[in-house]
Each structure stands twice: as C-alpha cells, then as structure tokens.
Length: 140
Image 1 (cartoon, rainbow, N blue to C red):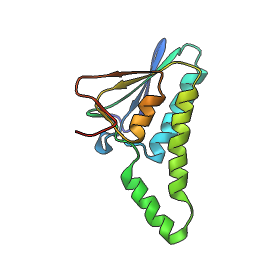
Image 2 (cartoon, rainbow, N blue to C red):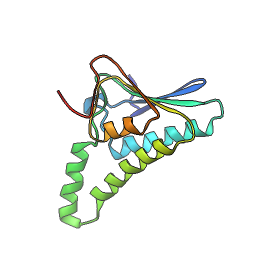
Image 3 (cartoon, rainbow, N blue to C red):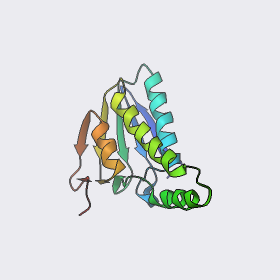
Image 4 (cartoon, rainbow, N blue to C red):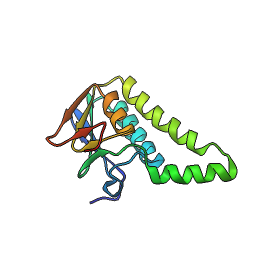
C-alpha cells in the first residue's frame, strides 16, 4: 500500500479520491484536509472529470477529526494561545464547504464508519451510497 494519505485515480469520467490513513480510521487531520483540497482542485481543473467519488480504505470512510492532532492543538493552546485548535476546526469547515459548493457532482461511497466531521463530509456530497454494515453519524 502507498504512503500517500489521499489517493487520486482518474477513471474518466470520474475521479476517485480515497482517504488513505487506515491506522487512524481515515481521520481528518490537517494534512489529510490539505491533501483532499489538492485532490479536489486537481479534479475540478480536469475537464474530463465530470464527477468526484470519495471513499476510504479498509473499515472506515472517516472517523471525523483527528483526535490525536486535536489533543496536541489543545495542549499547545494552553501554552502559547496561538489559536491552533480554531485553525484546525476552520480547515475542516472549509473542506466541507468546498465539497458542498463544488461545481461537479460529488458522491460519497461510504465503506464503513463516518462519524463527526466524517458524517459532515458525507452530508456535503450530492449523493451517498453506503456499503452493507456502513455506519453514518454514530458508532455501534
């Protein structure tokens, strides 16, 4: 498996964008969000891409915000009060807004859990298709 955190595959007329961090259940870290924004920009600029399909590897679409990263931001907030946690939250919001307003149709191919911001990600897409056993918005 590749070490890229987001995989991009042009399978015209669609682009398949895969969240690829199974060790963290495809959590939305700042690095993941930046890579997703770059993949979206790439698909948006390609006239052969007429739709974007988002999915995740292994047992999760996305477990939401990366709680380990959030914990680090909160620890830093108490020390230097730089607002890092708010910047991280804003990045997640910008990703969801970008998907929601994208000029090309978006499809969430939900292969496992999608909770927290992961559920928000799914809800921003134009269409969601869930595999058997997929859970959106809660854990069981």
